[in-house]
Length: 309
Ligand SMILES: CCCCCCCC(=O)CC(=O)SCCNC(=O)CCNC(=O)[C@H](O)C(C)(C)COP(=O)(O)OP(=O)(O)OC[C@H]1O[C@@H](n2cnc3c(N)ncnc32)[C@H](O)[C@@H]1OP(=O)(O)O
Ligand SMILES: NC(=O)C1=CN([C@@H]2O[C@H](COP(=O)(O)OP(=O)(O)OC[C@H]3O[C@@H](n4cnc5c(N)ncnc54)[C@H](O)[C@@H]3O)[C@@H](O)[C@H]2O)C=CC1
Image (cartoon, rainbow, N blue to C red; front, side, top):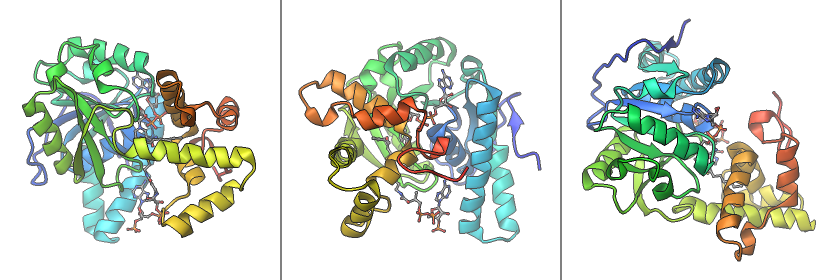
């Protein structure tokens, strides 16, 4: 079945599930997060364009979305006709593109989920700022960077904020909504309204490093790496301990492999530069070695653990 279409013109179909002012959504980046955000936006009736830098990456994302949406449909409807209808309707709301600039022409909201690098994000938003309509809200899904610094690249700081989703997006219920000093109340309300229309529970957070979840989660993950580096316990035993002793669904090494070791390294390197006196953010020789070897976790088939491709 041809599940996806490439971008021609944006079609829009109303959905009873959608009661917010944001209808047309462009998601830039189709990796782990961008694909998940685009999927959920399409599932909730928004007209979505998902963008990446080349066709191969877009195709890979489409495959992940197909797998994921089938799991969502099965959970919602079992294996009856409703499930196929849900899948085909959701996917009919989703188009793809490899041209970020033209993809924002009719967007109400742009969600950026590209690599965790301030300069690259700023460069992208600078280009998009010229191409998007004046009403368009810009949001970054950054895990660790300052929203204000990213917004500096644009002339629309009142229409800029953070929308931080969690992986896997179709499953995780939380959305951190981050405002900067200039974010207008209308923008903030629209972001929260959209979060709810996406089926998420929103929490408000100031533009501080790591917002709420990552300010707690990243030091925890890095303490686990230090335990392993010192040889005090194995990765497997640390994971077992945190699952059975603290009730976490995944241990810290399983979770690092799941989110991507490259993303983990980008975060910690950035914070080490910004807060050199906080030893918890010192570089980890083990993490650096794995990333250098291209062992980025589940997405490359190996990280702290090996995975079947
Ligand atoms: C070094 C520092 C790095 C820091 C990086 C920062 C990253 C960030 O900025 C913020 C983040 O996202 S942090 C990560 C947050 N995510 C987590 O903590 C996930 C923890 N794991 C889990 O919840 C479950 O193992 C999980 C839900 C993943 C899987 O659950 P199970 O192990 O029970 O496996 P399943 O039985 O396969 O799945 C359970 C239910 O979920 C459904 N499902 C799972 N994956 C799905 C997906 N991708 N798409 C759609 N549905 C999915 C699955 O169908 C199943 O549903 P039920 O049938 O109702 O059980
Ligand atoms: N991995 C995770 O669990 C989470 C990550 N985040 C954040 O989300 C963002 C994306 O992370 P992931 O999806 O994990 O990364 P990823 O590496 O899986 O995907 C990033 C995608 O962006 C694409 N890209 C890079 N530059 C681009 C550009 N100029 N235009 C269009 N596409 C471009 C890449 O080709 C790649 O496909 C990062 O800021 C990360 O910190 C936020 C929450 C959780």
